[in-house]
Structure formats: C-alpha cells, structure tokens
Amino acid sequence: MGDVFVSLNDQLLRMQWLSDLVALLVRDGFGLDPTSQIGGSVHFFIYDVIKIFILLSVLIFSISYVQSYFPPERTRRILGQRQGWGRIFLQPCWAPLRRFVPAHPFRCSLALPVRACRWR
Image (cartoon, rainbow, N blue to C red; front, side):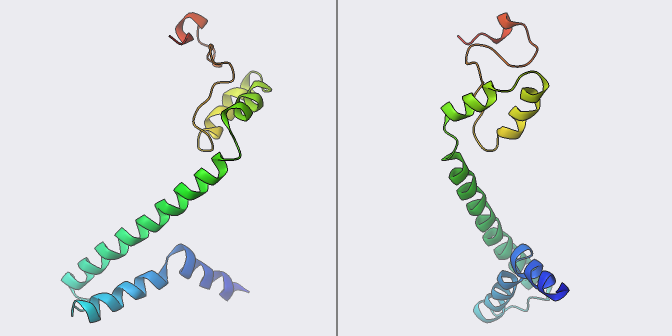
C-alpha cells in the first residue's frame, strides 16, 4: 500500500514523468548531458517553465470552476447570515473562492467606523 502512495507522490506531485520527458528532450533533442552543468541548467529551466504553466492552469481552472457555483448574490447571502467573529474569519477564507464581496455593500463588516467604510 505504501508503494502506491510513493508512486502517486512521484508522478503527480513531483511530476517525475515530466522530469524524465524533459531529460530525454535535453539529451536527444539538444545533445546535452542532463547531469552536466549546462545540461542540468537547460533541463531545470524547461522543466520548471512547463511545471509552473501546468500548476497555474490547474489552479486557475479549479478556482474558476468553484467561482461558478458562488455568484456574488449567493456570497452576500452566506456572509450576511454570519455575525461578529464568524464573519470576520469567514471573509478571508472565502476570498480565494470568490472575489471579496461585502455582506452589506455600503458598510464594512469589520469594527471600523461606518463613516470610514462608506462606498463613494
């Protein structure tokens, strides 16, 4: 059972498949040894650019997918049901799911003077 988790960690989280593919590209495509200094640098650059692109794509897709289930009206309703500390702690947790939408659009929910929170 432990081998399954190690394998999933290597292939999904560490993206070992991508590292092997880029090493093959560096060795066969560019004619560089991936263990040498310049080959390792080229491997690292190509591997990291592709890995960051994949991770950002997955992140942006997931956030967009979740946001489609939380329109601003639903967010206002959910945050409007909370009072005091519950709302103060829920709003920062809610921010990744939905851009900040205050429960009351003309007042801040924190303990700031109402005069300082008016939208103009």
